[in-house]
Length: 416
Image (cartoon, rainbow, N blue to C red):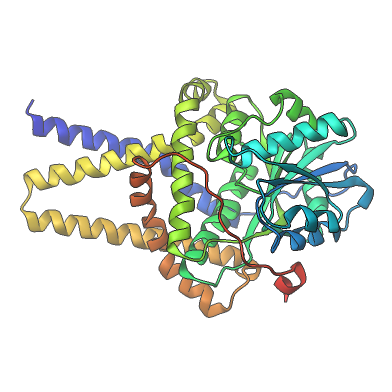
């Protein structure tokens, strides 16, 4: 067998593997259009501890706390805790003024949200105690939550889920093509991915903010010990490999601030990519073992593997090999034409994803009709920039950097 034949055969095998690994995502695009069962609403009330890690967030934090204080849930069953993490502004002061219990932390060596949350939980454990709390909810300082958020989320632990998450919407969808790109991606994750997982009875995925877990799970974890650059992805992998099923509530709506400029987005997504590399290196072997357990846990481990750096690495290798085989066997103009067609197909495939997301979530998106339609044209460009970002992230130093938040609006302003 010639070297060229070997490359060609390997390319076909990788393409087949990609089809097998990612076909389920096409199925997930369809499932939300089918009727499904709703979670029960007549459930016991639980006592929640709300956890917020904030770093120089004096502009936006008050609005999150106001939206939490306005919940249509018994006030005595909500306790809000804020860790002012390495702050140089009035974050701690404004948090106290809005009724939160505040702890301050100064540690320049252990930097990141994971360390801040671990510190916060340990302070609560040592100074207040965890026994009174049934569950914990994690938010970012720039979030806003709908008035019924906690009431809706409370349906998930009642249904037997020890980890749970809600629907992630955007405060600034229409500010720029970057903010709309981020927003559509999160809406797709909520509406297509998690909604479909929930209906299929498999493990959903928490996504950065607006998620929670029971005290029983916290005790099983031995505290919050997720310190990679993407602590949420690490938490997802831990849950999948330890047989913890995560639930999703489509009616628990959270609003998040998205990056506005490409430089902000590049920085944030570089951290995502680097965190993804950290997590797959740590969890690849447990995930591989978990796949062969079968059932929903095996499927969850399979999903975690395909959407990780491992899955995208296989995709990248397949693409490079296909291009190389074409370059070695076809005239240059044929290779260039094939590459152009691949980009066109990728663009319209991603645009279709955006269109389907708009169809499902049109009424929930805070933007004009024209802005929503324009977003599906730029969404593929946003998604395609993941490729160079993921590649460049391999050669940059792994470090956590805060993203500055400036969209200081209230929940009432958002609804209008």
